[in-house]
Image (cartoon, rainbow, N blue to C red; front, side, top):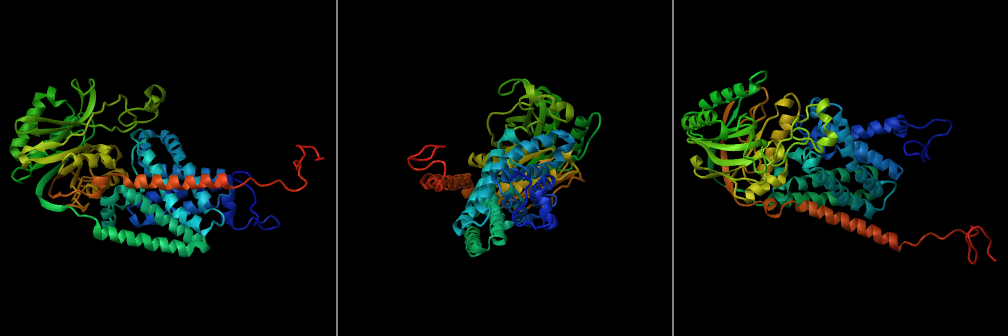
Amino acid sequence: MPMWGGRRSGARAGGDDGRPYERLLRSRVGRGAAALCAGALPALAFPAPALWWFAFVALVPWLLLIRSAGTGGRAAVDGWLGGTGFMLAVHHWLMPSLHVFILVLAALLGLLWAPWGLLVSRLLSGSPSVPRAVAAIAVVPSGWLMIELVRSWEGLGGPWGLLGASQWQVPLALRTASVGGVWLLSLGVVAVNTVLTVLIALPAARRAAGACAVAGAVAVGVIAVWAPRPEETGRTRIAVVQPGVVDGPGSVERRFARSEQLTRELAGREVDLVVWGESSVGVDLSRSPGTADRLAALSRLVGADLLVNMDARRTDGPHSAGIYKSAVLVGPQGPTGDRYDKMRLVPFGEYVPARGVLGWATSVGKAAGEDRLRGTEPVVMDVPGAGGLRVGPLVCFESAFPDMSRQLVRDGAQLLVAQSSTSTFQHSWAPAQHASLAALRAAETGRPMVHATLTGVSAAYGPRGERVGAPIGTDAAGAAVYDMPLSRGTTLYVRLGAWPVYGALAVLAVFFGAAGVRAVRTPAPKPPEGSARTAGGSPGRPGR
């Protein structure tokens, strides 16, 4: 049968191919379009649409489509095109920067879903046995998690759009994140979609699937009751300064002046720390004493240290001279010496991978003209003016990496701070989605987190992932003060790390191991009587 075409055995005689949607799915273009659209559906669960509940059903059309593939090759193509649609949907706001190059990247990353398509087809196609259908409820989510793990590598764009991140505003989900991080949430979301697919398409396995669903609900209930909760130990007042959109000539200095003005308005409000966004300072403070003095004067006026962010060329970098993005703590006497250099950089946005080969990307989009340099280790800063508050800084999309915030908390951070700038994507879904990640990081680690940006969305979340105060949206500029609860105690995620990933690897290892054993034990089919090869004969000759 051709990969995309071919008449199903149930097609009607007389040239009638059945229902219109069946004819559509048997055409090359129609099936490809269906796969792209089905893969894109889960994007609606993320901000800005924020239809969190939709994540639990969004994969069902895609799973049903793969189930109907008929051949392994077609299932792999359905997986690839669906993955391409998903990547385009969750990163569509990059189109103004990358232009046509985003299509290439989405198609390449979409290949990660081709093996997943084969896996889904192997488990759910045709009329699988009840044990095979039940196995799918564990194996299909495990396969999805492997895709999320691979594409979480910084060089492939990082963990933006992990399916579990869509549940950032659901209290029960945030409790679950404290146990197994965003990884456990992704497993759960895909498992629910798989159960629904079995209930819809496999009547013989409905009772078993229902039992799995009940067992899963009981497990979630146990998590909600049993998972340790952070214990509040006090409060700290954190101010976020968001200067808003400042464009045109001299924008760097005008943005700095606007941030100065907003910071002065904090005088007398008894804040413990003032946080500016990413790239809020366009010079190296160690070589610009005038700018350092202005910041020190602000610190004295407000009575609190300032955490600013330099996007500047330095001559004293950890490896070599170049442009670094650095979080710098400034006190009443100037920079305190605490500085964190961003470690994980945005591909194409801050460096071009294999620039000698892919440097042409700078001519078709807004890829980095010069590679930024990266820091070497995480830093926990002590803030003297805040009673010894220990702050763990992250820069930009580093807040998407759960392992980074986990490491900062293990190093003693009491407050997580992400400094970001999404001004390039001001009127897209990106700012709201980026801010939502702080809720997950807070819930995973049991530590409060502040997300401070230049142009919004700026927000703050408590140690259970709950929102603190009102966010500053993309249509506003100002300075907001957040009364942040501090906490102590260690979540299971901080203790154990990404254990759901290891569990998923074990599930896949058992599944493929069992499949290999069955393949070895299954005898090869015997040739029928009268075939070319018979006992005592040789190929092509009759036996004697």
